[in-house]
Image (cartoon, rainbow, N blue to C red; front, top):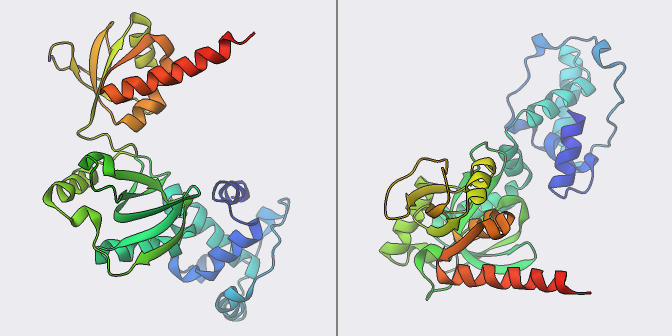
Length: 296
């Protein structure tokens, strides 16, 4: 349990383990209350475990009063009660823990979704003005995402949507009086609903990339399953199974963002054919890399 708490402190940029403990206990009411009849007074199970020491801050005054009352009425030690709430937190799916930690920003984003408003926020250090569309989780529920529509009114509909990790969003502030970008017209509204219905973190639904694979490239595709895009067409229109059998031209359900993450590991075993802008991006990246290796 302590290892998981420490991992969350590191991953979510929390000030300290003590800070995380206080955040959990300050919101103890969001968890299922403990059953006093199932708490024993004997903590010998943990006698050889290093204690987790921290000081309750002023935000935990309600918990402190609650813990003291349980100690008097049911004989439950405060340390035992703290452990119960820490275990309740750790037992949440990781994506749910991300929502718990960043609840303040999530509530603001949810209000904007319900009110069909835009927000100003900072994402990975960059200021953005976007309209939040919906909250979603990765298939294994280990990451929480907020899908947003940006303010580039002249860009193609699909490219205006972005999947933002909740834990990297900072400084959410409502753009009062604005109207959500994804509600501006039918095409954007439909695109938002399609991404909601067929969510993946790279927003690949409806987007395609055509790639020429060598024999080694086909074998590598079959082996590299993390973030692997789905085959939708082979050569002249024949549908294909998930696995790739041999060299050839394949069309994948794949956004440009995913292509830039997945296909660079193929080096020369995968040639991007379409779209042209993506092909040029790969050409530039490989030319730059080749220039590094040509240096004496």
